Structure formats: structure tokens, C-alpha cells
Length: 258
Image (tube, rainbow, N blue to C red; front, side):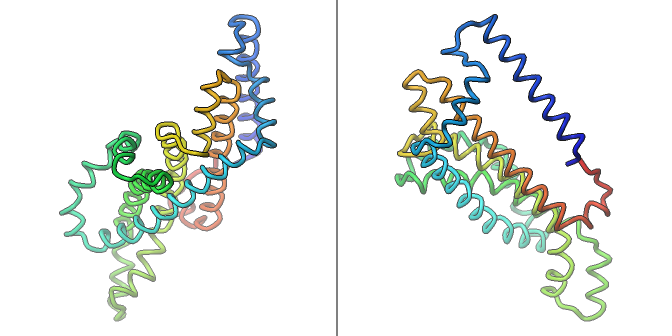
């Protein structure tokens, strides 16, 4: 991300906050229901020394990381297997296309009924939601492998596993990384959504519900602010990793630096 882009983003965010501050202060005039941005930011800073919030943040991030890692462990091998076996992929493709559009949030009530263990239920929902972007991107990556490169290796006597390791997996890796980056954002949404719907003892969603029951909309928005900030940080970190590891792929596809 260029410095000019960062400056434009910062200017846009500052302008939006300034407009919101003026509207709340001089038009709405109800800073209990609609707290001003300055109030939300002040409370957000205070949350950094709140043991309850930090415990909840740690719980949410733990569930997020475990769910994402398990989804990677399931989806990448499955995507590689299906990509290497086109007849099998074509046979189960209708099932994948049927299940993929189902909103992941919609399965949370069912998961609550089927999985009585609170943490396991939330991680399972995250895994389900994250599987699809990683699996689909892995499939696309396997289908994008240069057939000429594979045929060249075969002509030199390399077996299927060698072709997979030397050509298919390196070629599909940038697609897998993109799927993981998309899934990371989805995992955070599902982690907080599951806490909002299922409750529990700790988590950003649990903190938001408890703040709402006390009519503390400022705390609700401050906690939500940190969830958004973490999502931005995770996306930027994964995007930077993609660019460092797969810069050759961006050069090949002609992708523009943002």
C-alpha cells in the first residue's frame, strides 16, 4: 500500500469522523443512544486497560485462529485432491455449489442445538464458514496450473506426486493464500456473531451484549471498533505476506500494486 493511498484513507476516515461528530453534537443531541465518535474513541482507548475486555478479546482471537487453522487444514488438502481428480470434482461440484451460498450465520442456531460445548460450537461454525473460500480458491488454483509445464515434467519421467509437488502446488499457492485472506475476515465475523447469538463467558460479542444490557452504547461501539481494527490489521498482514511470498505471481498476472 502506497503512502498516498494511506494518506487518502486517513483523510477520508478523519472527514467521516468529523461529520459524524458534528451531526451528533448539533443535530441528534442524544449521545446516549448515538454516542459521538470522540466518545467512542475515548472509550475504545480505555478498553485497552479493561481486564474484562482483554479477556474477551483473547477468547475471540483464539477461536478465530483455531477455526481458521482447522479450515486451512481441511480445505487445502481437499481442494488439492479434487483439483488433481477432475472426475471426482465434477461429481461433487453440485453439492459444493449448493452448500456454498448458505449463509454461515444461519447455521449458528443449528450448531447451538447440535454441539453443546460452547467453545467447540463456535470454532465449528468458524471452520464451516472458512472452508468455502479456501476450498474454492484452491480448486481454481489447481485448475489454473499450466498443462504444458505438467506435461513437460511427465515427459522427463516424473510421476504424479512429483508433478504435484513441483508444479501444481507452487502454482496453486497464490490462490490458496487469497482464499485464506478472504476466510480470515469471514472467521472474525462468525466469531463475533456466534458470541452475540450463543452468548458465553467471554468474547467481544459477549462484551457487546453485556454493554447493551447496561444501555452502554458507547462501550458497544468501542468494542465493535476494535473488532474492525483487528480485521483491518489481519487483512493487511496477510496481504503483505502474499506480496512478499508470491510477488512472481503478481508480475505474471499483471496485478496492480494498491
